[in-house]
Image (cartoon, rainbow, N blue to C red; front, side, top):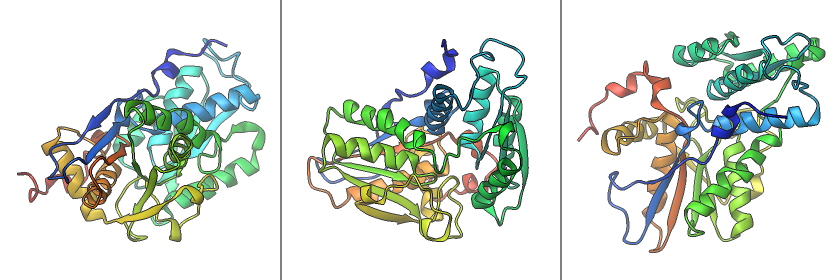
Length: 318
């Protein structure tokens, strides 16, 4: 099967050293994986590509006849719940392989994200209330698929082993290679937990002494888009808690402030989960010995948060 070129563009993102966000202890370095440079603009491209490829190879998504065709007659529709980035990735890949895509999300998903999905010809179902959030979208998709199972291919990003496997084979392996095996700490926020679980699994396989730190909001009511407060939400089955050496809570305010600093001091225009990851990494780095190398992830671009008011704050602009 000859795949569309979009698949070859996923992954192999740069690893960037962060040097302008404050003083670090001597001999301690902090790096961030620029996942916003994936073709769909986020780390979720990796999981989406992995899950779609797995579905094609297993025969659950029989699309070989659709590749290179302008019709998708008889092909099941790809459907999943999303807060935005996975939906964009699935819409992009669905367009490339000629398969229809339907995406279920909370009504307060940003207009920018919905517009990108629709521009890739996906059907946006955004009638889940903001109060129900990503859990509500997850339950709504399950209800839709249960009624008409033959109509859909449901990747189920929260419970599909192909999600963390994409990071085990990709993100984690790339971090190991790009740091020449010198990484000592890996820090990542959890939504589906695919990025954390897969990357941590690969890094600990390479060196069991690597510390893996899971970042999550410090409250059930938070504004860190794409992340989960695990104690108050439906827990993804792909989350492997045995890989968590430490859980680092982060506030919405600290995440917003660091997101602004990434743009204004490093020139990296990223989303709020990037701010959460970097804030947690820099806090961790303050108490590490010389020779420590901390690696985190910049999950997506700030272009998906243009309407958010936190950009207008100026207290940390100098």
